[in-house]
Amino acid sequence: MPVYEYRCASCQRKSSFFVKSINAPLSPVCSSCGSREMNRVFSSFAYHKSLATVHEESGDPDKPGEGYYNDPRNIGRWTEKKFQDLGMEMPSQVQDMIEAARDGAMPESVKDLQPGLTEV
Ligand SMILES: [Zn+2]
Image 1 (cartoon, rainbow, N blue to C red):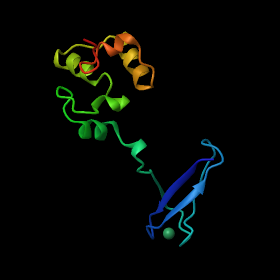
Image 2 (tube, rainbow, N blue to C red; image 1 turned 135 degrees about the vertical axis):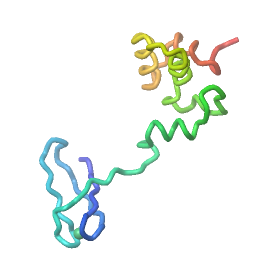
Image 3 (cartoon, rainbow, N blue to C red; image 1 turned 90 degrees about the vertical axis):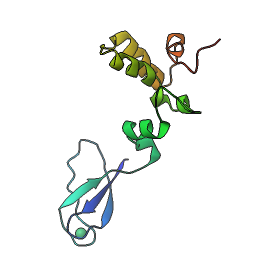
């Protein structure tokens, strides 16, 4: 069962609520002051880091540092950037491969797109 965290708009206290279903209507009430003005708080686990943050921490895609491609979210970034630099739309086939690679499937053809992973 997912747990959602809410912050009370009145007293700023955080409360956690079990959510029986993602689609179930939820009207959280502050456990401290009883206010119904609750705002959803999104957890800041590393897993939930935004893509922008991951990119920032990983550095320039043209100069991938050590461990750059250890983060699957960086896979295909170099390719994306190249297409962007050329002002070209990335073919959907390439997009699909990159998406698949980011999900953990690493087809040979995507490996070839990675400068650091190309076998010599
Ligand atoms: Zn409150």
